[in-house]
Length: 240
Image 1 (cartoon, rainbow, N blue to C red):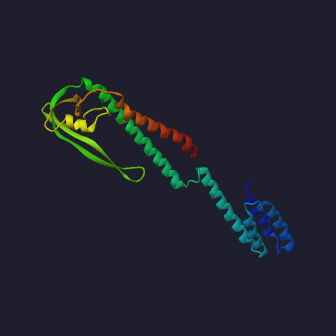
Image 2: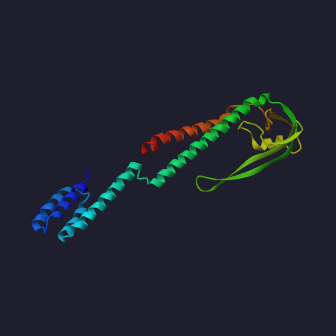
Image 3: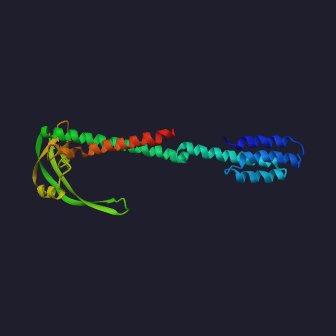
């Protein structure tokens, strides 16, 4: 039990005594000492002792009330979890929400990719022409604060479906494609067979079929979602 509340009551009793003698004040201070001198409120007791000796009992009461407010505030922070303030707690919730939504988007696009990979073998095809074929460099930040540069192929081809011109850039739904070999296989000007989705001719691919690498995006999304969900249940829900 917090000893400050009964100490405030004792001081209010002392305040009601008219012109208390030193003996009376000492009796009350002995009671306060028993409650406060426990290692936690030693300094508080010394401050109260000074105020009482100077007959500033009202000041002593206000001081104890301020100590009680500070103690309650610290307990509230502990209840929020690891001393988190309301603003940090809100940021934690927003961050988790963002990660959950992001992982759901990755899962959704991974699912669409797998479905298209499966169905692409039965898509109709038309002739097309490679319009661009090159290796480009993509730069990203590394976890150590540096920069990572990777080479990726950029292949674009044009084709026509029902007298409408389209362009595509997907070579395969598999992840094991070699970028430099793609550029070698599909040079600019080469005629290619383009497979397209009947209900959405903009969705197209040059190499049909599916293998285990086609599931990479879908599995990554599901794993990310489960990791964030478990972390939320374990660490954030107990804070509510």
